[in-house]
Image (tube, rainbow, N blue to C red; front, top):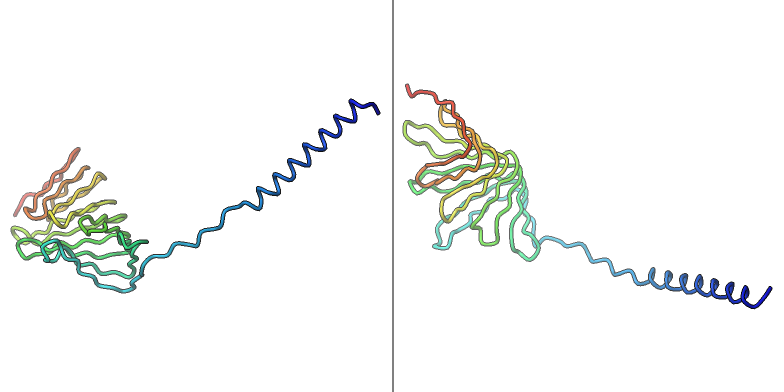
Length: 185
């Protein structure tokens, strides 16, 4: 074997050995696995009343499972049943499969199979909202949704999207809507 061929074999061997050494070193440099993050606390079969900035009730919620997220910033709920006070002494009731409450409890996001029922209005009729997502703002007594919403009042049905509801005045607005109106008897 001549000198050039020997140098080529030695160089290839050196490259392979250095590559193996670097590969082994990188395997040992795997970052430590972070311990699983846990919530601050979990409540089961709970009832919680949250107060607004002035100290009056913002909402009450009951349910089978509540988890305060890491750092105590927000709440995640499973199958919650909310009750929002009305300025006239009535209550709006809401339920969903899941919900999220913001850190200051100024936003309640109802998620999946949302149903919200208002207090009786004129003639004892209740207004019902049905949608997949609804955000309630307890401080301003308003609600909104960008999803498809069905609003039922008595036998009248209104369907549309981009709901904006004033829970205090019992008024709501929908875009791209269609209505089936039943006359009052």
